[in-house]
Length: 55
Image 1: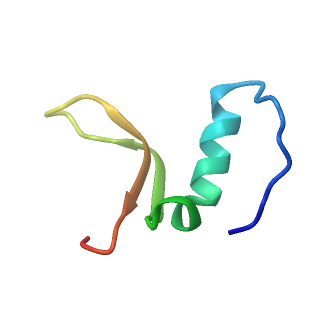
Image 2: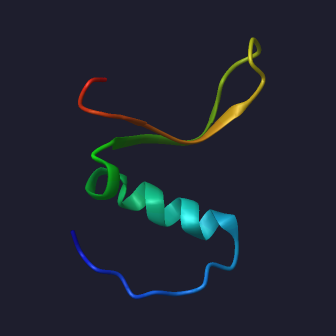
């Protein structure tokens, strides 16, 4: 893990970008996609999509 300097996030996208960029290190999850649409059945989206060691 690498320490990053603290800073105030201007918008939620700043935090999302940091999490996605370091998702594997922080959570053990391989990042796949940002703002992933869940399709017409659910009509939503997943902010940050990833896979853990169990798939």
